[in-house]
Amino acid sequence: MLGNFSYCNPTKLYFGSDALNYLNAELPKYGKNIVLIYGGGSIKKNGIYDEVVKILKDNGKNVAEIAGVMPNPTVDKLYEGIEIARKHQADFLLAVGGGSVCDYAKAVAVSVNCKEDPWDKYYIRAEEPDCEILPLGCVLTMAGTGSEMNAGSVITNPKTKQKIGHVFVDEKVMPRFAVLNPNYTLTLPHYQVMAGVYDIFSHICEQYFSGTDDNTSDYISEGLMRSVIHSGRIANKNTQDYEARSNIMWAATWALNTLIAKGKTTDWMVHMIGHSVGAYTNATHGMTLAAVSLPYYRYIMPYGLQKFKRFAINVWNVNPEGKSDEQVAEDGLQAMENWMKELTLVLKISELGVTEDMLEGIAKGTIILPGGYKVLTHDEIVKILKDAM
Image 1 (spheres, rainbow, N blue to C red):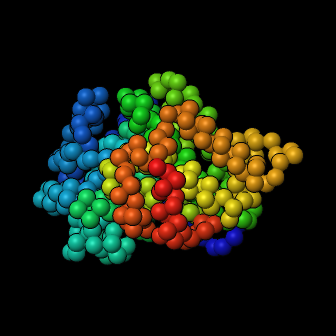
Image 2: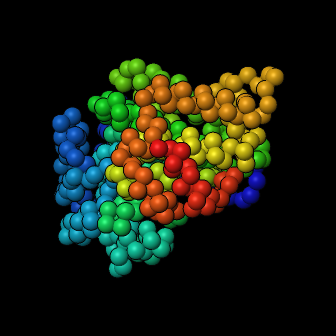
Image 3: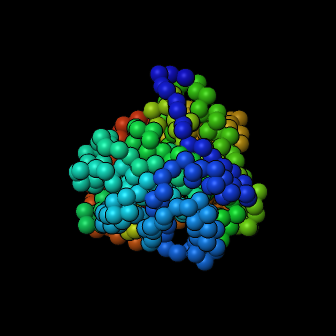
C-alpha cells in the first residue's frame, strides 16, 4: 500500500427483506418536516411508496414530495427540488429509488441553504459546500451506482450537453442511513438489471486499473469482480433469483463506498467518457460505460500491462502458460467481452444513438482526469470513441 489516507464512512446500512422496518428507529432522530424524493412512479405500482409513507405518517412526519426524478437528473429538476425543500423548511430528505434519485437528493441537500447557483458552484467549479447540509437517507430500489453509501452526485445540463459528477469531500453529504432490501429490485426489467451489473463492475475496474504496488485494495477488488461476474450470470438467466440479486446489491455498495479506492490513484476515464456520451444521448448510464470500456481498456493496456495480465489470471482464470504477457492480457479482455455479450450489454455507442457528427462534441465534453496508466489527449478520446462506434 502506497501513500497516506484516512477512511471514514458514516452511512449505516440496513440489509435484508425486513430492512425497511428500521426506518422507525432512524426517523425520530430528525425533525418533523420530511421531503420524500422519488422517480417516475414505479414505487407506487409496486407498493413501496405506500409502505414508506405509512411509516413516515406513523412517526408523525409532515411530508412534502419531489416526484419525477429522471434517470439522468437535470439541473432544472434540481432547481425545482430546491424550491420545494425550501418552501417545506425541510429537516430531512428521504430518497426512495435508484442511484439517480440518491444522487439527486445529495444535490438538493447541499443546495437548499446555498446562496450561489449550485450548478456553477458544485459542478462547474467543483467547490465544497460552505452552508448547512441537509441530512438524508436512502431506500434503495435499484443496485448499481453505490450512491447509497458515498458522497457522489451526478447532474446533467441538457442545454450545455454536460453530465458532471462531483464527489464531495464533506462526509455530511453521505446518507446517514440506507435501506437495502433486495426484494425491491426484483421488479426491474432485465435491461436495467444488466446495466446495473455492469455499472458495479466498471466501478471496481476503474479503481483496480491504477498503480503497480502490492495493494490490499486490489485483492478485495478481485473478489468483488468475481462475485459480480458469477451473480450477473445467474441474474441474466433469472432476474428473480433472490440470492444472486442480494449479492449484486451488496457488491454494488462495496464497489463504490470508497473502501477499495484506498491506496489507489484510480482511473475514472470510462465514467468521464460514458458521462459525455450520456449527455448527448440520455442513454442508460451502465450501458454507456459498457459501450466505451473495451475500446478504452484495449487502448491503455500497453501502459499497464502487468495489471491487465493479473486481471486476466486472477479474475478470468486465464492460463498464462506458454503465452506472452500481451496475449494473456488480451485473453482477459476477451473473456470480459464474452461475459458482456452473454449479459446482452450494449457494446457500441452507435446503438445508444451516437452519430459520427457527435464525436468531437462528446470528446470535448469529456473531463480528462489523471490517475490511470495514461493521461489521454483530446485526439485519443476521439479515437477511442471511433473504436466504440
